[in-house]
Image 1 (cartoon, helix red, strand yellow):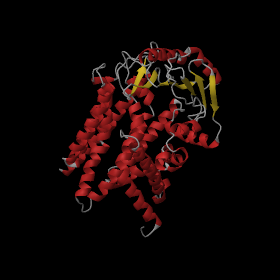
Image 2 (cartoon, rainbow, N blue to C red):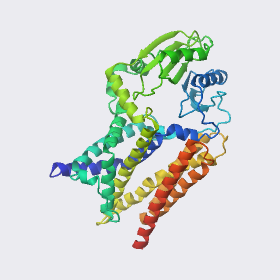
Image 3 (cartoon, rainbow, N blue to C red):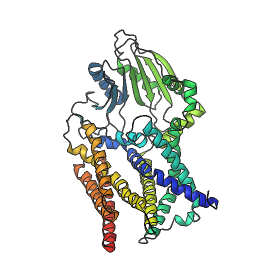
Image 4 (tube, rainbow, N blue to C red):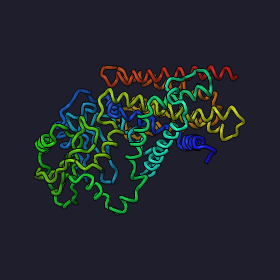
Length: 487
């Protein structure tokens, strides 16, 4: 502990930021992009039309295709079409145990002719898994979210002039400008930053506090899911072949029972067995909570077996907080506010990391400071460059090449790795303008490959990419000027 409470909080704020800053930067940027994960998925599948589709008919077509091509799978998980994602997104298990994820054409139910890509799902999963095996990625993300909550609270404590910081920015002042930017961006959307970090920690609470569920459920994971949603029926396959009941009448019946909320997801277990089950999960139109109403039908007879409407305060509180975090309930205006606030949080983290090195490199410094300064370039400029390469790979790789979804993701980490190596072997004052220029060109290229801009998705993607390109170009210009003055 330091001499005073505020000094201790300042030490804690700086220490947590230094330890978790790079991970938090990647988490915040990917989370910001995942606000528009449905739109990104549509952009990355240009073969699909963006016109609205009928939920029941599209889901019935997907079930028909899966019945013919994936009947031996133990379960099908279908995310049904909505106004943001006009296609069925299916997940099912192959005989080798590997899960397949495909966008299914709403007219034919088939994935044929649609390029293989994770779309916006990559950013959503990376945001809390970091492309690491379970549970390591989620545990790191949970600890980082908790560190961010503490960092935000300590940042609020150490600011004596929090209201003045709301209006203060002094450009061209070196370290002072970085501190002003850090304070201003942090104060402007502080309620959002605190909400998003706290709800992020809550959604991964079982990673932070696993002992309660472990003590209650031991190794019976399904029992925990059933307690959370009592409509989730579980029964093993009988081993006797069976046929699914006609799916269209069943879904129409489910829509009526869900009373206007619509269908969000359909799970079909043991689809080719007499013990098949069909679970229908309600949508959350106009509701923040992500779990409100669910139904389970016998797969062969269509008989309703279980129905659950969530009213328990504890579960509703959890699903409300989770819903606040993932923002599926939001209208378009609110989603843009989430996006802008998420960019501000990303900038707060990045400016804090940059401020740490700027402050120390002005004083007698050592190799650790220099390495941190160089790695800052690789992370703060390399991460957006790597994410931009994902969009470009989607357009540049052959549309129907095998394993292209894996190759798109590999492009991210190849570019990221090259950026880190490039930043490590050169002085930061040289790599900053070069990396920022690369980011500007990459974002401009995304706008170019979005053409023709014939629908709102491609138009908004091109516009946002051009704005990013302009911002990176301006930052690169300022970095070139600074480099010239230091030369």
